[in-house]
Length: 117
Image 1 (cartoon, rainbow, N blue to C red):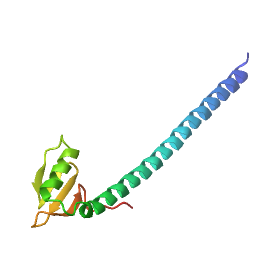
Image 2 (image 1 turned 180 degrees about the vertical axis):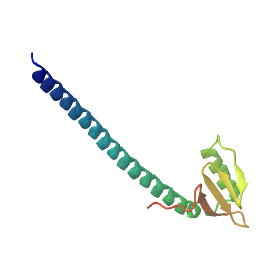
Image 3 (image 1 turned 90 degrees about the vertical axis):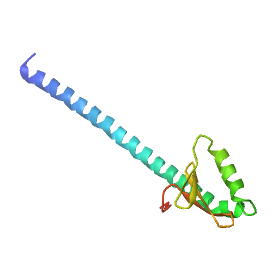
Image 4 (image 1 turned 180 degrees about the horizontal axis):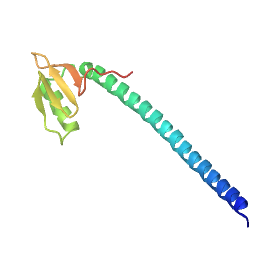
């Protein structure tokens, strides 16, 4: 086997390996893009659901005392220790701002402002 033929074979094998390697990394890139797209969509859906829950909780709690609301919230997050900060009772990931009458005035998410864009 002459040297020129050997170099042609080596070049063809290396070119084939390069193509296979590029196809592998292209597949990884497409997969990562799809994963990020799905993750972004799921984040947006979760954010909108939280936005909706934060908006509808005060009207749903009408007629309940602040202690009732806090007791129900504590039952939903039993492993979290409640604390008071900046005029709100924080339980889990939500803050519950009560009025002077002890009624639920506003629900605050952990991060502000809550923007789902």
